[in-house]
Length: 232
Image (tube, rainbow, N blue to C red; front, side):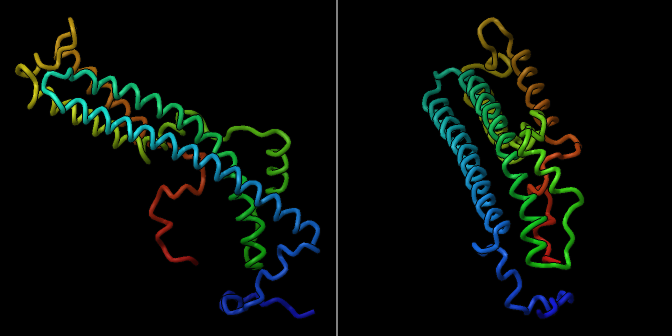
């Protein structure tokens, strides 16, 4: 039996690297392939559910903006109601993201500790990864908090949507309002200054949740520019 090369430069040119890793006759490896395929399928399913919620939010945003600026007599507070509706989609998507992260973390565990090591024997698997993965299969659990999931979806999608809605509201009450601001921002008996203050406060809180420093529990989500660097 030939000795496997250990030098990375030699392995880069070795066409047999990884051969047999997923052969059917290799019992454990064959079972691992089916396990990996199943986890990929579940991750893909939840990824599609995330995208579907995002599409609904974008369509709703487009409809509200179109209606709000179609006629000058249309009430401006419809844009504020749009904030509530988009916030509802954010909550739904954050819950779905927590489930998606559970399946994605399993896929990344297998990729990092099975396939990466099988293709490059110079790499070392993480300590105790088998026990942790087995424990996760025995007792599945969500790995990130609801606040982290909300912050992630805000950074990726919903913070720009809220910014567009609130920017459109400011434009509506200042440039297209029936009266001068802040009178034009009034909603019923609530003065315009109070409404404006509440909108600014809620949006500032949203920005704080999205941008505050934190330790991310969801790994390998391409939050930094590291993925643009060339592979080692």
